[in-house]
Length: 306
Length: 257
Ligand SMILES: Nc1ncnc2c1ncn2[C@@H]1O[C@H](COP(=O)(O)OP(=O)(O)OP(=O)(O)O)[C@@H](O)[C@H]1O
Ligand SMILES: [Mg+2]
Image 1 (cartoon, rainbow over the protein chains, first blue to last red):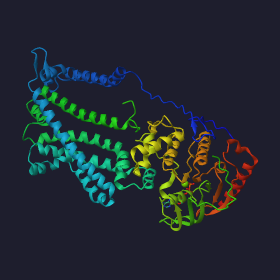
Image 2: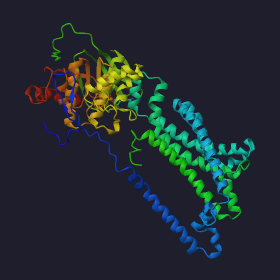
Image 3: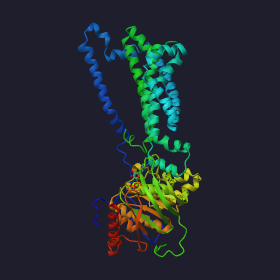
Image 4: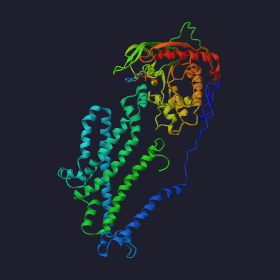
């Protein structure tokens, strides 16, 4: 017999006199957690902070070096944007339109969130039905693709016509954009369960429902979250686009963006742009957080480091 | 408990836990995988099937467990007491060791307390006590295979099917797991049906070795392995062991031509 070069990964002593197999497995049990909380925080915020500083620097450069004085209103310097749009240390006053912009952002966020939730409910249901029957899949999938490929702008008049030019239609715009990524990714996840796992459930005589809930859905979670991330971004965009067109009722941030641009309120416009970016980021981060919580113990995509 | 099985002495044969009667298998696409296979596995015997790749060994186990239905012939087995260890550990990555081992009992509706107790016993038996809370991601290949063994053990199997379970492991881990399975076999006296590509593993583990021909797979030879249990690794260096291995190897090559 040749002794292999590979070392054993776990040490076992088999004693034939005892009824159980004795094992002094001493494989490392310590999980690797690097650095202190503060260190990690700084470590993870450092790189984006550098990027942020670079962007601000570039901004100043463009304002003062590239633009002539009379065209500077196109891109006022950052401190001026802050002073006019957010908070003036000189007068101690908040920006005139800041309150409106924040409210508009929250309203748009609400449309995006409601739209995303509705898209999830419809999307999960449809994807699960498709995964259970080839027939349903063939009947519905082409239409899911159609929803995806029709430009949302082409549907705007129709949506407004049917549901009015109000908040409800903004939500519908979100649903239309968010639906396909959820259906496609959930379906992909549900269908990519390993054959070996299916065999295991077959051996145990598991019902369809058990197979779905205990095997297919957990296995699909990583793919579901991929879909959710895409859908969340889409939903925010849908809500802002919706603001532009469905102008009845309280204005969302998209409508305010449009107004500020028309009135050449550059500082307010910038603040509105920043607020809508924050909205997108919040959606993205919240979903990332939930994904990390659910997946980090077992899936490769969510290690301890983020 | 040491079992000294000599399959030559079949006096008053006990009832078979698994028996194949004239099994043939032709897949829908026309692949003829098995042809007229008959043999049976009695509790306390360990049968190993060796044969060229693609001859239908896995197919045979799938038929035994009910994953596939034979085209002709019949199988007799107590389906819900079949332990099946696949080539891959096939652990559910989102479940920790304990919940993976509990799986089959859970699917069969065993109460929470009872299945936990069974699972803990099985985990201890395979030497993984203390690792109940670990997810498969953090286990080595050998440990995953043990979890897979424990999962099969929870069914308290009367028939234990192994489909090349240790093929992917390094030699030392493999030999260690061979000894552990042997130990389990000595303790539980199930009927073992083992598949391997390693002749040495086949001789070391078994009370009988069956040689299959290339596709369509037929049983072309049968060797009784007379060594008493418990067997120790040194057995592999004895002349008797070498002779049996040589005979089986020759038989296998004959089946190829
Ligand atoms: N579902 C299937 N449909 C059609 N042919 C199949 C199917 N499953 C297996 N086969 C064929 O049946 C034959 C036997 O397959 P099987 O997996 O039983 O071989 P094996 O002896 O286990 O091979 P190996 O030693 O490589 O694992 C092979 O030729 C294989 O291609
Ligand atoms: Mg095989």
